[in-house]
Image (cartoon, rainbow, N blue to C red; front, side):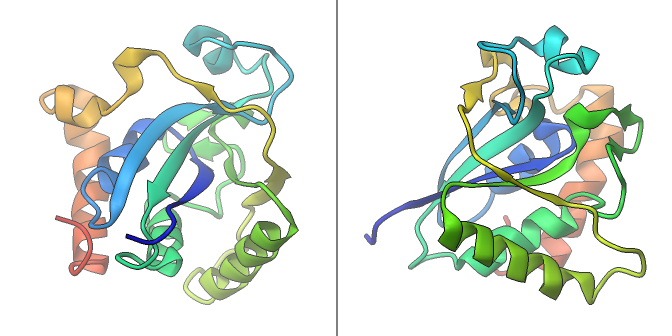
Length: 176
C-alpha cells in the first residue's frame, strides 16, 4: 500500500459526498466535519445557522495507487453543482459553499488545475473556492456515514439516491 492521501472538500451537505466516497474503491476513510470558519469547536446547529463561517466538509482519505486523485476530484465535481454560489438545492448559505481546502501550495495548485479541467463540462462558471485548510472539526456521530444508517430517510431517497446513481454511472469502475 502506498502513502495515503487526505483531501478536504466542501460540496454542500456532507451527507451526499459521504455516501459516494464510502462506496469508492481505494477510499479508506471519510469523515464529515466543519472547516473554514472562525468559531472554535462548532456544532451542527451553529454551522447550519450560517453564523460560524464554517462549511460542511469532508475529509476523504484514499490510496492513490488504487484510486487516482483525479477520480476523487471528478467525483467531487459531479457530486454537487460547483456553479451554484453558497447553495446546493434546498440547502442555502455559506455553510453549503463549494470549496476545496488546501493543505499546502502544491495541493492548492492541483485543486486549481482540477477546477480549470472541470470547467470544460459546465456551461456556467465554477464558483468553487480555494481556501487554506485550517482546523477541521469532526461532525457529530449522527453525521458519519449518514446514508448507510438512514437509507429510508426522505433526504436520502430524494437527494442522495440520485447523486449516488449519477456517480455510479459516471465512475462505474470506481463506485459500487
